[in-house]
Image 1 (cartoon, rainbow, N blue to C red):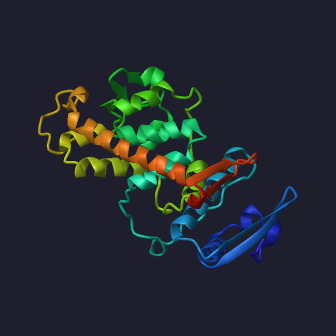
Image 2 (image 1 turned 135 degrees about the vertical axis):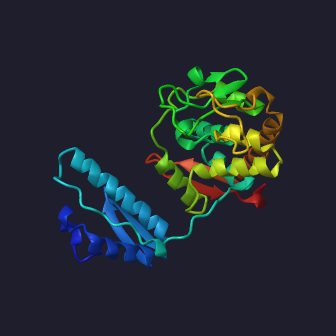
Length: 296
């Protein structure tokens, strides 16, 4: 709408030149107003990061590829990525217990999302495997098999791990409709509402768990076993497809560290709830109001 192409643009108009114009517009100060269903939506930005524009481009690619697969267009155009010089260098981010607590509390009215979060915090499982998790087939008393049923076995192993005490209640109340393909929209909304850095992704929780275990002096072989990595110090020769792992029932240091992290996050979630009121409107818009302490 704010480009020379106007609203009459065609797929064939999406090319290297128009993508570059879009990138410059997004990364610089910009604003827009759009009327939709009788409502006026306004947005103003000081400019976004190269990573944010890259995500826009990836969404556009997905939409075009879907249209091509559905036969609505003949061939999806090639959309260039944002130049690496305009994007931040990769960083190993972690979240604080305060940030994790706010994220968990933000999901209070969405049990399936909250279970997904707690599973990642309590086990360090990969986000995609957590999305497909089903207690009925993967929870076996004192342990969990984090590898979803029917998934192929690859180098990214989803191991059998111990169940810490606070996770058991989450598993017992696991929603029947918790299995979904993606939570991208929820994550982006949460990140915006809670002012979480844009570089934080669901896998950041996994990195946070690993860092907490390392800082808690959990033995390296236990961390490797929990995360599904082969311990590089394991010099046993492989005589079959089975590797030597620590017994998940004997990973006491891991269980203590995970329980401590869980307790810290739970405490911070309670603090966030005490200071904020979250409301979800009929159109699924999430509104956060900070409570007035002076009226208590």
